[in-house]
Image 1: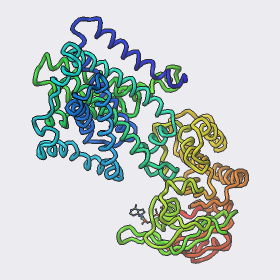
Image 2: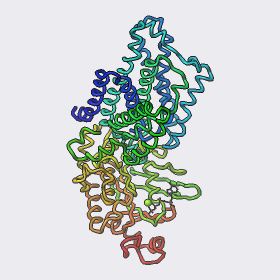
Image 3: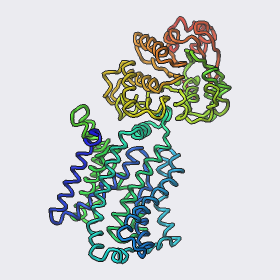
Image 4: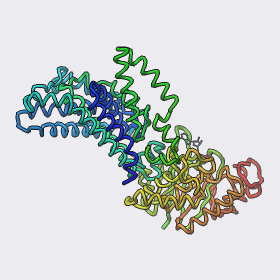
Length: 329
Length: 254
Ligand SMILES: Nc1ncnc2c1ncn2[C@@H]1O[C@H](COP(=O)(O)OP(=O)(O)OP(=O)(O)O)[C@@H](O)[C@H]1O
Ligand SMILES: [Mg+2]
């Protein structure tokens, strides 16, 4: 039990501090929710990119499908008197959509090695955008707006509370869940299989690791969490989904940056990466609106050059052998 | 029943025939040496047996089971383990974790827990003499230590057939002796059915192998009792282009 709790302590402490600060200091809730979105986005991608070393350029498609899963639940079942159960149905649909897509993409693309996998996934999110717009699926380019259904289901006060507060709390909950699952996985046979295949896929195979099985598993796990994020941070928070917004490759790129910056395959990596990236992104947007990427990009290049294993990867190496090493994995 | 049987196995890389219709039988109890000049196809042969490559022609049997089409990860649980000529450690993991992966996914069975695998790993780490490097990261090891790590990883898989690709290369003669004795001892103690070792270091082959196969340009040239084969003039010629016999020179790389 201790081996799970010790590495979770710093991460959970950080969540509690952020939550406490957001709740008690006026004006801080919004920026903290914004930053937490990036933290959790990184955590979800880390489950795949960090664990396997495979780059998924179609990652945002899971976010998008999760958002649509939740939106469709509201547009299909609002009149069925499910009460707050409709949110559960929405999350279920988000998860099912993400799993189905991860199985479809995984079955084909995960047979490809490294760079070929990356190239094969580039089309996935763009493909979905054009499919939804072109085939006028799920409202086509007009998307799905659920603000009136939210009001019908919960009343306007509760609906407002849901989108301005509860959806952010859900993001915290998803982050905590992701952290627990990551720690657990790292300590199982699956965790060692993933480490082995990330470090040297051929050596792993020769040693008996069914690499495809574990890649598909990590891909599915990462997809589910991305779907949950899409359902909360998008649909519940914004109360609408447009294909153009949600299938936007910029989120994939940001998530990759966060994982690399913090330390791929580590527990605390995407949390630290998301924190740094989120803070930079938020405050630069207010100080230098429109120019934030111009500043963020070279800064990130600098940090990644100084810490090739990411910030947490670097700290982990430094702490090796000391009594603090158990707390940073 | 033979342990491993290769039937006219061929592997091509484009126009190059790296392994050319090689047939070989390895029996329970065998200690076989595989020698041959650089590029003669020894490592490729190991890659075919362990499933890194599939042969273009020919068939491979393990205890009468046709494993020709079997992917590498399914061969390991059947008892095939190999070391890599150029060590391929999992760099960001510790020595212990590296070896534990072998125990977890090798021939011990799927039930092997992480904790059990760690204690099995410790046993083999001690056996190869890396005990004080247990918690070191694998990429911090010296070249020789990485070779020993390869050996420990393969041993932890509990193989029936152990394939060692130039484990003693780069070690000083003292260490070569020690490691060869160790491998012989482990073979008995751990009941490994057969060990095949590829080596250029001829004293190691002489000390270890009862039987030798010589490869040249992808083909099997001769196979037979170690001392007889190493005394053959043809064998010396493929190595040196002279008629000095290998048995006299010590290292086939000269
Ligand atoms: N993946 C590959 N692609 C192309 N050619 C290859 C590949 N692997 C091996 N070869 C070629 O096949 C031939 C046999 O190589 P192999 O590595 O099996 O030789 P070897 O007997 O192990 O040599 P050494 O003693 O140098 O280790 C060489 O000509 C080599 O260049
Ligand atoms: Mg070789």
